[in-house]
Amino acid sequence: MTERGNSYCLRWRHAGRQICCTFRGPSTRKAIAAKLYVEVHQHQVDSGQVYAAIDPDCARAPARKKTPLLRDWIERWVRLKVDLSPTTHAEYARLLRYRVARDLGDLHVGDITRYDHLDPWKADLARELAPAGVRKHWLVLSQVMRDAVPRWRDDNPMACPPGQPGNGLPKPAPYEAAFLSAEHARALADACSPDLRALVLAALGTGMRQGELLGLRAKDVDLDAAQPSLRVERVLQRDGGFGSPKTRRSRRTIILAPSTVLLFACLIEDKAAEEPVFTTADGRPWTAELLRRHWRPAVAGARRCAEHPPQARSSGWVSPRAVSSCRCDTRLRGRLRFHDLRHSHVAYLIAAGWDLYMIQLRLGHASIKTTFDVYGHLLGHGVPERLAALEQLLPAPGVRPTA
Image (tube, rainbow, N blue to C red; front, side, top):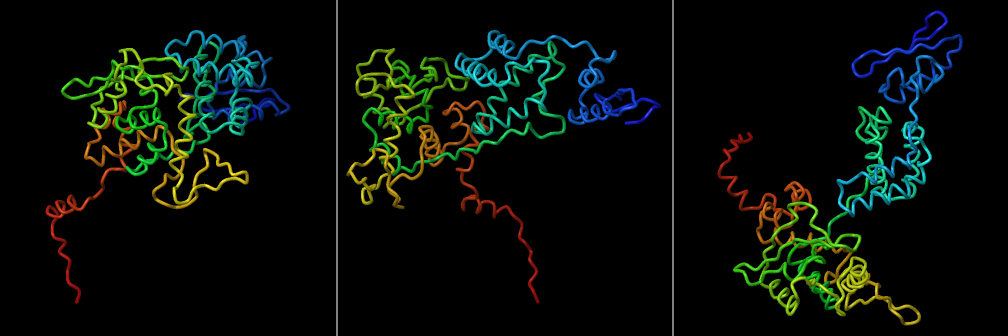
């Protein structure tokens, strides 16, 4: 900032060119405020934005556009957003209409700034939600604000600032996948009710996702072919309806091992083509909520030890979710998700010698990078046979004997 007689000139570089703003004295209050404004915005503002923020009555300040309220812009965005799946669209609409519109809906789209509104809102979210929830809210609102450019704004205030590694969002703790040994898988299956046991065995034998299993119909299973298999064509969605698999790779054929063939032969016997393969004991189709209610007691049962059962309460009653506290290897330890059955299936494939590309196709991953990132650590590293072959190719070290 330089002084010019009775005025003060502020210069900075933006988009490869030098920009200048001048404020009349004798007071330096406006010039200092403009300097702070430019620094807070990482110099990514032009002179019109500075004049509009610091001295809106100045003749050089651009006329301010009348921008809509954020809640109104959200409703328009939700109505016109047609490139999302129905479940994703419903989830985005719920987030925007509930939390975002409640906290920021009365602000005009053009007035929202990172410093005054978005960073404090992010901090409030972090005190109430898990890191994954904070990141999802930020991602969805960022899409809404991005679509306001250039109609109502010159920039997206939620974009990552230049030179910064990220938006300062909390990092979610990665979930550690659980891999069931054959013994623990049998313990889990034994703790399940007969109808849930069929689902567990199918997940362990095919590696299918929960929604894919619950969306499977009798006509999707072909046991009469030379190689018995099933076809993933439909999934149960979070809203309780059925839809197509999310990606092209997810729509796939899975060949079946002999024991899994016997399982599906019993499940589809006397069922019509459109009937679901998996149903409860009373014939109802499974839902995600119903599965959760059956899954938790089954996992608790697998975590109990026959030799060291959980202690009963003073009344003699033992909770169905009570678990043993011993260190016996025969019982399951730690929490288990239904999705961990898919992880365990991959561990069995790797132990059986399957390569990652065949595993990718079987799981329906869009990229082999996903397969490697999740399961690469299960591969053998430096096994003795391979080291012996390497030794034959290495030159002799030629170490000199010590005197």
